[in-house]
Length: 124
Image 1: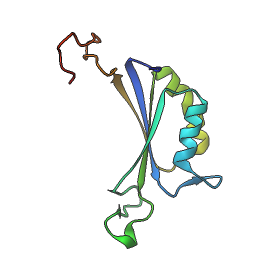
Image 2 (image 1 turned 90 degrees about the horizontal axis):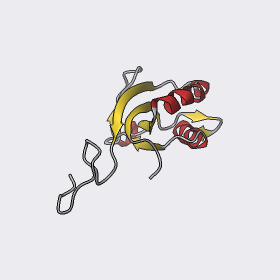
Image 3 (image 1 turned 90 degrees about the vertical axis):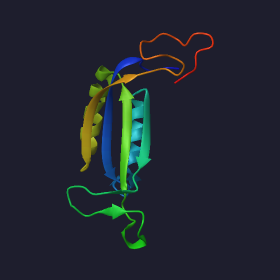
Image 4 (image 1 turned 120 degrees about the vertical axis):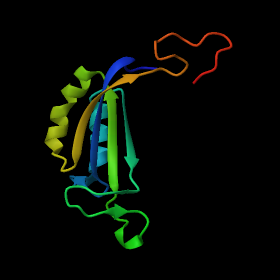
C-alpha cells in the first residue's frame, strides 16, 4: 500500500451536500483536487443529521427537512503534504467547518508498535 505509516495529519472539511464549486458538488471538487495533488487518500461521508452556523437542524428522517445534509470530506497524509494542500482548499473557500488533527496511520496486520502479527496471533 502507498501512503504514510505512523504520524500523519487528518484534514476534515464539513460542508452541505448541495454546496457547489462551478456547478460541481464541492465535496467532489475537494476529492479530485486532493487526488491531483497526490494525497494518500480521501473519503466522503454523508451525515444523517446535523446543524452548523445557521443553527438549522438538517436530518434525513423527515422528508421536508432531509435536504442539504452535512457531508464530511476526510483526507489523511503526512503533515507536510496536507499543509501543502491547504492553499487549494483556501481557493474553494468552503463555508463549513475545517479541522486538522494529528493521527497515526496503522497498516492492516500490524500492531500499534509497527511489528507485524506473528504466526498464530489474531488481528485486532
